Each structure stands twice: as C-alpha cells, then as structure tokens.
Length: 395
Image (cartoon, rainbow, N blue to C red; front, side):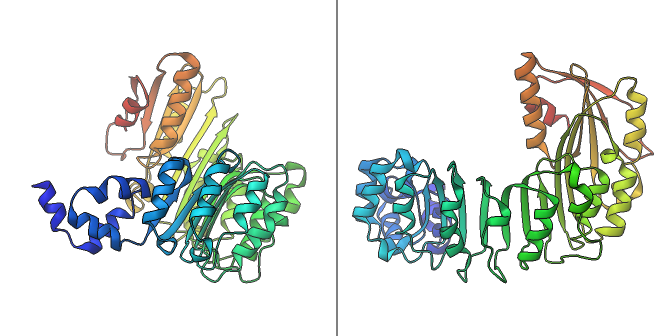
C-alpha cells in the first residue's frame, strides 16, 4: 500500500522529496526501484553533490548520468584531502555548463586546490555560500567572497567556521544579503554590519565579544536603529542586560530572538522584570524569545532566592500575553544554574547535560523550578537525571 501511494504521487511532489536526498541515493537507489522512478529521475534537475560522501568510482558514474546544468548545490569540504576527487570532477564535468549552481559549501585550507576550484565555479546564479576555512591567511579568499557578494541573486552568507576580520571584508554598497552567520562579532562590528547590510533579515552570531576597556566607545548611538533585521541569534556571550538593551535598541523590528550565555557569576541577565521592561519598550514586535543562561551560583544563595527569581517570570506578560514558560535547573554537583525557555532550547540543554555526565561519569542530580501560573501550587521537585533524554522529557 505504501509503495502504491508513493507511485501515485504527482511528479512535482516526488521532485520535492528528491530535493532532500543526495545524488548518490537518487542515482544508485531511487532510480532503480521501478520504471516510473527511472523516468522521474531523468527529468529531475536539482542535484546536490557532496564530495565528502561520494567515492571516486561513483563520481565517475554520476558524471555520466547528471548533466552539469542539473546540479544546483556543491559541497566541497576537506579539499586538501580530496584532490583526486576534485581532479575527476573538473575532468568529467564541463564547469562552463555549471550555470545553475545556487548553493556552495567550501572547506578552504590555503592550499593550491582552493584556487583551482574557485576559479572554475560559476557563481552567476549563486544564492548561498558557506565557507569553512582553516586557512592561516583568510584574506587570500576575500577576492572570491567579494565577487560572490556583488551577484544580484546572492542572499545567504555563512562564515560561522571561518576566521575573517569583519572590517576587512569588502562589503559592497547596498549589499543584497538577507541571511548572515559569522563566528564572532564585537559591538563595533555589529553596528558596522547593520549599516552595511540594509536588507539583512536574519543574523546569527556564534560568539558576541566585548572589549571592556573600550566599552563606552563601542556602544552604538541610541539614535541609530535598523528596522530590516527581524531575527537575531547570539549563541555565546557574556553581555550584561545593559549591553543587551543597547544592542537590541538598534533593531526594534525583531520578531525572533535567541540568546545563549555561559557565565561565571549570577547577574541581572536572569531578571524577568528587566527583560519584560526591555521587550515592552524596545521590542514590541517580538513573538519568539528563546534563551539558555548558565552560571555558577554564589555562595550563600539558596533555593528560596531561586523561587524569587522565577517569580519574576510568573507575570501575566510572560505566561498569558507571550506564553513563554521558563525553567530553572539547580545542578547540585557543580553548584550551577541553568535558566532557559521551554521547550524551545532542548539542544542547548542536552549539550549541558552531556558535558556534566562526561565530567562526572554519572548523571547529575537537579532541582527544577518552572514558571507556572500563580494560582498553581509552586513546589520544587528533585529529579535524578539519567541522561539528556530523560531531562528533556521532564520539561
């Protein structure tokens, strides 16, 4: 019955399914199921080639079945170790016919192979570029990045695994990028990027760094704001609530905000009243707020202090108006607090639990508090967590 249902699907829908499969599976498995699938594959023209998952022998076979015009995505990681595959690719595929490439993921390493590949790539229709660079001279790659960014269809740039100096990247005037991911960013660089990228809608920062010695000069002008940005993710920082307020005041149109922070001491970052004030007065359009804050508990702080902290998130603003539920976990073994939204940050919670289990070779005991409505009886409950999956289920 399942096979019959799949065979009855229209070609357009099956093509959408194929969009989520790699070229090897399509050519060597799906195409051989039946005559109809064979014919559907012959019409398919959205192939994704991942050199890391294709053997040299299969690459030769694929080159006979797939016309270059039907390739829309290339993944070329570990290029210094895949020189033979690259030679095969360049010899069996007419690169001048690679005219429909929309997405490229590159692993650059300052090797001769890098320039060999870059000069053969047709980027006229490129929409997305992801660079993972281990090069000790990343500036050598900037001419290629600059060439990509001036393409009219280019929208997405990911540099989360590359050590580029933001200020030296040749950002073009009226850059069309709408999605940007970078490895690190300072307050000064953040303000600079918002100025240079007038169409930027989604901004992901792996680590937000602050130069405390030059903090006042780094803070942006209060009068400046950039309404284009609607989604911001800061995946690691030690910013204070005051610094967050200065940063977020630049982007009053934010609809989604995600913050992750690992801190050495407790501070006002977990004050629900401060966040409520900031969101009401600065981010009136915010619909999704996800955070994961972790810090070491100060000596002398007891669970009564934690209940008071949770109470600040048990207001009508958090529970009724926004429907944002907050959880506070007290990890007894390390005297550590994890403070996070639920159920929106399970991956961040899982990483923390796995780290604790690895360090102590045992599952940590936690005391959990949740920001339930005020008319519910509020009691802390002790759970013995036997792994990240159990902890997540308790949410």
